[in-house]
Each structure stands twice: as C-alpha cells, then as structure tokens.
Amino acid sequence: MKTAIEAFHTAQDGLPALARKALHGLIDQMRALAREIEKIEKTILSWHRQSAASRRLADIPGIGPITASAITAAVPDATLFSSGRSVAA
Image (cartoon, rainbow, N blue to C red; front, side, top):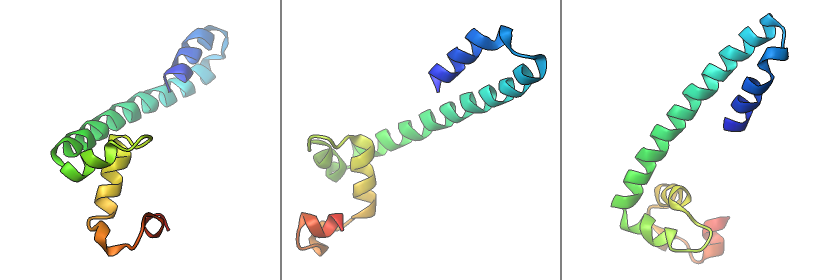
C-alpha cells in the first residue's frame, strides 16, 4: 500500500485533475484501511501474548503470532484429531 501511495505522489503532477481527484479518494481509503489493519493486528497480538497455546504454536518455524492465533481460535481442542494431517484436512 505504501508503495502505491508513494507512486501516486510521484506521478500526480502529470495526471489530469479529475484523475488526481479520484485517486485522492482511493488513497484516503487505503490509508483508512491501513489504520484499521494496524488496530486489528494489535488486538490479535495482544490476545496472542495472553494465550499459552498460541505462543507454543508460534514457536514452530513458519508460524507467526497471527497464524498461531488463528489456529488456536479455529482448533480449540487439538486432541479431537488423530494426527497433524487430520487437523490440516
């Protein structure tokens, strides 16, 4: 997103006024979306820090806090599955 906004600012002087106006609206939406994503990520990271299961999952290479939180939320009782393959399916 940041790259798109920077590209717009670099090229805006060469764009017609109507295009600049339309793109400014889109840029504003992109910035608002980025702020919302940041808020949600902070909420997820806070929950992750409080969850022992999520923190254990994050110790697995390739699994970060967001993925660990999602797995923990989707699979509250891993003993219901006979293997990791069953969980993945």
